[in-house]
Image (cartoon, rainbow, N blue to C red; front, side, top):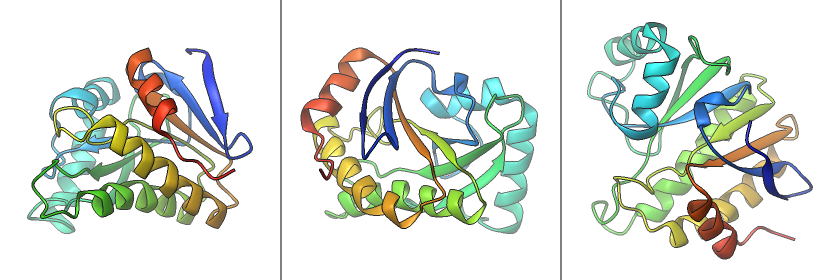
Length: 185
């Protein structure tokens, strides 16, 4: 696993650079599209590495819970399949500029709801990508501020969550996050 680059919130938030699908945690968070049926980027990597069990579980969710697709900011959980993570928490991030100014609230909801779902299920460790900062076009600088503020508020509400890993695809993404984060002291 790539070396840790820095920590926040008394070590409960740790930053990594590398492949999200390599993290052996209770759950990894998938930046999914609303169909839940796989796609590109992080979503495609999770489905490819995790295998058919994840897609099968997502199809059942679509059939029984969200027939019109998972709304932006909401979360669902499936098996981790062949991943080293036990579970995958799927969330749909906002497409920048397409939510009538509600993008920040929706991005915060992705992170807040993922932590809430993990806590409700007794999970202690999570690994998350930079939701919406890829093809969905969310500016990484703005996302860093929103994510760090959201985690600063949400993590203390869930004492059972021991570690939240923010996993960046490359060093540049991580550096942008570090330069724009606003974690509580």
